[in-house]
Length: 451
Image (cartoon, rainbow, N blue to C red):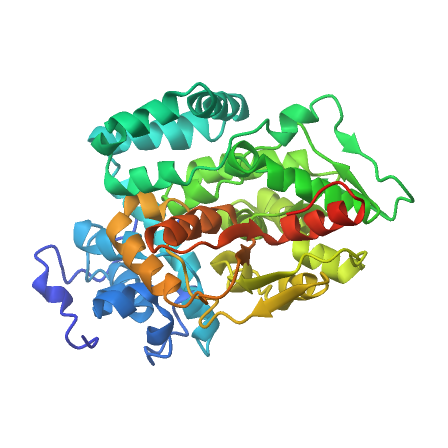
């Protein structure tokens, strides 16, 4: 469908008003769409356009809709909301765009407008309020949820639920997620609650602070532990600020910019004394770097956010740029690498993780075609938009080489989604985080274990 065929006047809510139909708070930035000339260079990069072939589900189509609301041609209604929330926010279009149009930023601002105008109600509103406002911003509650999941796994309840078929009362996509849920272990922040500073064994080369994350620490605490091991192995003194919190990415993606700002302020304050903030989750790192976007109308906090964002660095880039000890033990594995969207497109980090993998003796890297194509995770997109997420995942898995033993990546959401893909399509690859592989090589070198 061409832009000419995207007839906005077909929608009954379209008007001819000349004034903007956006609400005053968090108004989308017109500078972000000003350079879009609808050239179509973004079309082939967009997973949703690839699947639907519909202009409103393409980057330029969404930009056109966002601009149309500003011009008073379209209301803030469901016709506008659907394509805005169907976007994966993978940022591949910005990478492809010759004018660097910030489609991702526009999408997030538009979602904020939609949630102001059309708040979620009913069960959707209740679930959103419970998790996004009641659990994720509160680390103690999140840890309790993790404790319940651990009890579910260890008590035999999980086995019983699966064997009796009770699991089948859940929607199919949630059944898939339950089936690949990693083993829940003690969160790093609980493990080190009496030790906020972890010193390296040898000389201290630099001091860094570590964002443990929310989902990362509850569901992937072993990856957080591996991150600390690798950092301290390489002369980093690691600080884990006690008052840090969720990065707010899920909230901003869902249109809840107020909670996103609250969490941003919390983290800016928590890490104010840090020289460098290390992350191991692509989505978190991208959000932290984009905190200034949340404070466009608040000069004081915008300045603080700008200063903070300059400190943020992904673990792979930090190791690559500061020099790290190359392991001597061989892993002898055939590995392919998936570029997490918010690492490759969001932060421009592509080669650094690959170099780390190539520096592990015995690792044979196998190229994945379209490695920077979205897997369909996109935060909680695979929960809110399961059909589209499933179609995106199917396309992704078609590009995973058959003859590899592991798929490496740098984002927890991608790991869960790709694990679903491995199971669903009868594969047998192990899904791993890049820093885990480096840590395993170090451990093997020290005689502490093997894969």
